[in-house]
Image 1 (cartoon, helix red, strand yellow):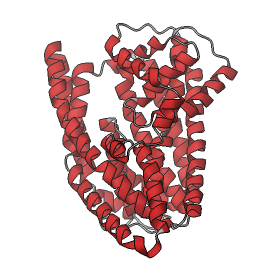
Image 2 (tube, rainbow, N blue to C red; image 1 turned 120 degrees about the horizontal axis):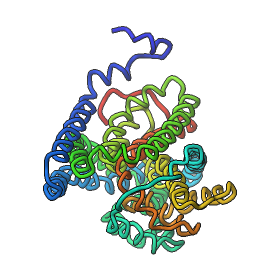
Image 3 (cartoon, rainbow, N blue to C red; image 1 turned 60 degrees about the vertical axis):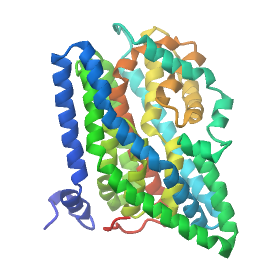
Image 4 (cartoon, rainbow, N blue to C red; image 1 turned 90 degrees about the vertical axis):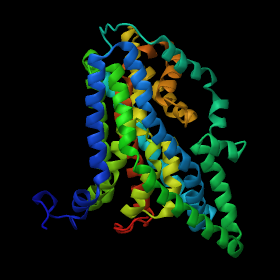
Length: 435
């Protein structure tokens, strides 16, 4: 079979052929999304509010089961792959070199994402003259309540674990990373004595990755439940009510994607279409479930198949989930300044740039917190004398925004891991076999 004209000049048509022949999971997920929208829309239009709420709570159990299955394997996967990866890197110098390159990418990508959010919200001014109806007071209280512990102490607690068992039980990825780094360096320092344990943990990692395939079989059901639940209660009319806000946000996401893809092509060249092909299924799952965490195991598998070495993937990807959430970063400046616009609060460019830097630092203190973007936005509003209650204005549309944020986070972390692998000379050829 010949390549389509668009792909002439690339080394092969492997990504396209693989998608056509093997990527059935993505097709099933897209079908599940369509069914979820249809069923949710039918319930929203024909059922009473009480039934809508009951239906949403019950059908969402499908999504809850899927996400819990994924969360079940995150801790053993992070620990086993990261320890083995660091042991294979060999020494503290190598860990520092790879980590330094990763942090350089993370900081640059985060600043660009925040800047895009700031520029777009200033260009479109979606908050000026906006008149919105009733808000969900309880949901606001839930979000604002989390900001009370938003401090330097909270930041440290999210980094340094007091118990690795507690970190595993609560899926605190950043804390697991810290423990695994110490454990991996110590294991590498044992030399020959540590090789038996390294081999055992390597086997554990492959067993967990094998489990990923089984868990992903439930993905279409989880996607169906998540989409049907939100459409049944919210409906699609919310997109019309928040048309100006949502349109400006999508524009910002589109610009961020352009920047990320251009950067990807600059570093990865002809390998970029293959990476997009590998990331497609994780992005669709993250989009439909609004959870980038739900695809962490699948991301590990796909990046290794793309050619990234396991020792790089196991080190960079967990860090990325705490420090490189590009979609969420873009949203933070966008939402914070939007709320100021609604209340008629003028923020000069100096104040906005200060807010950008504050968001850059404070966003790292809520890794693993549910709806972390909203928590950070609420805390930032409080710092700059913007009414924190303004968070209520974006809650009704937040789920739909979160879909795009989550997919963008997956793309950003996939790019970061692949580029660092390229910088380290550890980007091999595409694997056609299962991990």
